[in-house]
Image (cartoon, rainbow, N blue to C red; front, side, top):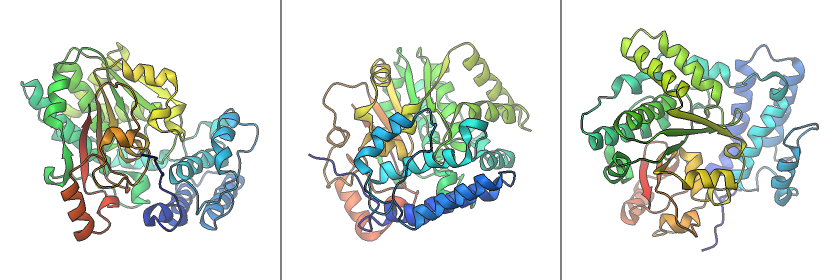
Length: 383
């Protein structure tokens, strides 16, 4: 089946709203939370927000740019398109790279989303997953609980909240369209080769990811590899400094359990039990089937690949609105044997495959907009 990825034209209301409203609003929020930006940076950001809102051409990267050749290749198929009628997966990713150009990130290494990330940390809320987690002596039970804790952290998404309050609530299992946690926990309990976690948001979601990583380390024979964004993107996505900032805040938390947990994570990173693996690929517009060889070979040599968040789900399932009944391997475009892939995602877009057709159809009829509301989710294993 030929994949036809979602476009930003009005036929997809949520993708269209992203370019007409959400992206410009996020860019203006960056201006608001960074009062120290120069007038030139503020002007460049405002100009980019207007370009996107006004349906201008997609533009180019100002030179010099270290990744200009790569982005020129990715831009080529869309060179004559505009923001309001192009591939959504490309448009969003390209917009966030353009934000870094406007803020001169690679000259200053100042994270334009840093103030928003720090405000969440200062609230103390991101540490709730650490405080909520109750471990068990039974590895399968503990891993199952860690998976459920881990998925709902994906609700706390700064870009989705558009500067408003984040949702730090834990979800209800009845809101899952797929729940393969028991089978996944059984596979993880027997793991000996590395477990790879493709990460999404910082803050509360990062806390849940680290709880899952430490549970795997403590109860199995497998090391853990954390795949992070190479540079700031999608507002709250995790980059290397976010890890160390999170741990620093945690070590000074009022709860001794949080302090102890963050110290243990620091030791695991230091001794190599947890490997941090940032890569530009996770900031690019290619789907998982088109991952570069060094990524695909790494993931192939694993006990399990755990893929976090809505955007990474879209990357895996080729960001397409699949017909009812389409199975996940078809949606992913799998043409070879893979290690088990586990998707943990709360739904903030229309892309979905491999779930119960009757339940999905009923929701489509009775709860319009449920696919993009961030309430439902999947713990979906692809074997």
